[in-house]
Image (cartoon, rainbow, N blue to C red; front, side):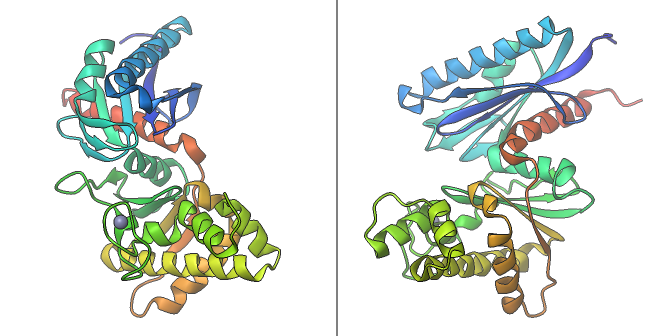
Length: 313
Ligand SMILES: [Zn+2]
């Protein structure tokens, strides 16, 4: 055994930026840095940049007297975790990129590839707002809406790596067109983007954000209140469906919209209670780890993998 303290190289790659960190085995962060993704450069350039950044982090760890023992990387979209392939990430431009082997070969470290929301869910379930609960649904509400079911600390990825797409539960049949091709998806009715767009459409004001709508609604503006109530009700419809499927103990809400705090949580809990019949009410809470959840979760996944490689005594 080396005497140097172990650390994991962790990256969470999104459409606009990458969050990168050196994470200790207990989930605390030794060092973090951010870089633009610049997805418009194309997938080869983005991949090369990812490998350089990861290599730089490993070098930083060694310079700080730490030993990089594994690497974890998370990307959005459809991920083949078993084979370590980013199958399809529209906002990063990946199609069939074998990120795990590329990164593992570059760093010479055991490496895992995970789904951004799923690893965020693992981090929230183990170390954040889902601590102490066995059945956790983490729901990220931002530009889109996606969720991760975490049971006993392990993320559920489904048969094709696409589990947790609650954003495409149809809550308003015939409603707002969704980029997926359907209409009235939860994401097209209640994401931060949808809330801003709905208010802009009804008010005639350009470039309104969900934050503006929340602020105006809290100030008692009728149109903003109507738009906000509509979004909260759509969210409750979608999440009650998720609860019917998963029966979790806690719903952890993350992403930009969760920053509305009680302005979201209070009416959402009330709308949820109105809708449930025999289902059990989960607690509905705000995520605790913020946007570092993806990095921490990638590191936890990498550590799980490392443990699985250890010879059993
Ligand atoms: Zn959809």
